Length: 298
Image 1 (tube, helix red, strand yellow):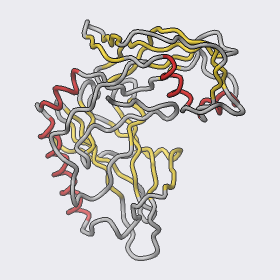
Image 2 (spheres, rainbow, N blue to C red; image 1 turned 90 degrees about the horizontal axis):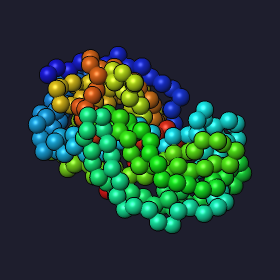
Image 3 (cartoon, rainbow, N blue to C red; image 1 turned 60 degrees about the vertical axis):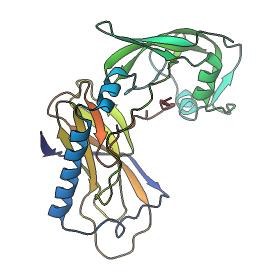
Image 4 (cartoon, rainbow, N blue to C red; image 1 turned 90 degrees about the vertical axis):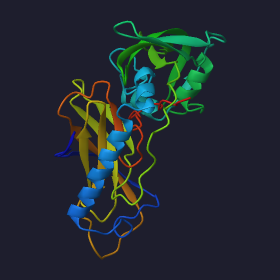
């Protein structure tokens, strides 16, 4: 295995200032750039060695872990800016009845015959997740009913057919689909969180390219540096991402904030069923969709 520095492509659409207790310049460990890089690279190798061939990796490979959106919009997408805004705001109004009962479990199926049985959320629970438990204001989308069907979800094991609630939405001929099956519990990581390693944990995974040759993650950095850099270590069983900051500025006034920035990481070969790991936490990088609810592990 070898470490390759990623020529990072920063997507500034997701730069957001947060009121977090993370400092932009003075709270990170001091040291020369070469020393910091060596520490980061050593940590990545430790994480890869701990996961490769571990019980955690074995559990990850046989579980259901969504790595793509668990909501599918009506065919053709939302037709107006108002509907798009309502969806982003989780602004829904229920007019009609949802199924009161349904099966307790459902089957997740992959190409090649592999399958897994997982608990199912009921229609009411699924709707509350979709709406955030709020009563819609203006604008809003109106749900008039639901039935149980299926949808395809990108997972750590490739595309899977999963049970889904198909919500009928006023004004749309095709349904809004939401996966009803609960993801598998994340395995206990074989290595704990890093101490005294420069940089910050990755915030989330937002996209895997269709060919698997790149992943887009959200990295954190401070207000007194030149943005995040993400390095990658690829092995046969894992891809370890190490996030650090570029060119921390010495002196001057730095407020205690963190910024979020999307970074696209190119891989030497498709991600496939390799586990995508955060070097800082030693855990899989959490997937969160840009819009809609995030998968909740149980």
